[in-house]
Length: 172
Image (cartoon, rainbow, N blue to C red; front, side, top):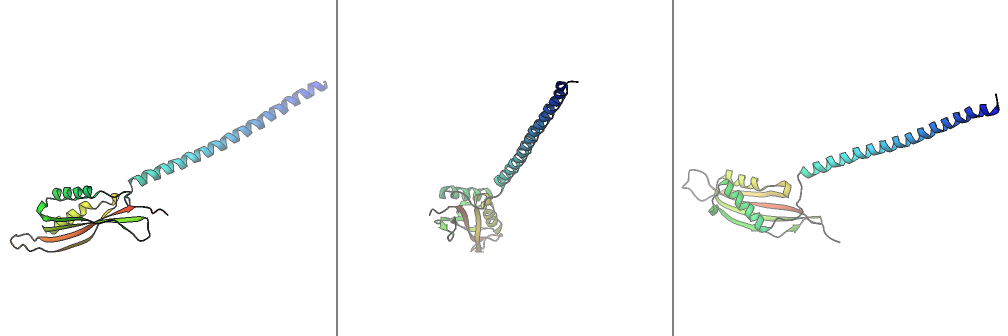
């Protein structure tokens, strides 16, 4: 046997071993990239799920205040839906927005005053106007016995304050 015949199989063996090592290195590199991509996809899906949950979660505050006209129309529509006569709605008094201390929020109160309503109507109206997804809450619900004695159903005078919490960052 000649020396060339010994070197040739050894050389082929070394080349095959080198190719195997290179192939394994490329395969490991691609497997690592695949694992990172799979983790990235999983993280993206988690973020998508979180965004979807946040879209449907109730907001604590609105980003902008409802207009006085829009809020008055909303109150009138709720009053009409419940069946409270127009004459029972004494006043809708919009008050200026007030910043909550040094926070990033303002509150816009609207006072609603009614007369000659049942307690059920008063509570239904207040409840139908509350809308947490728009930052609207009812506070300061008060009522007193009405003056009418000629009806079999107790009638009341009542008022409440409908407040809208608005996110309004201050600029510095």
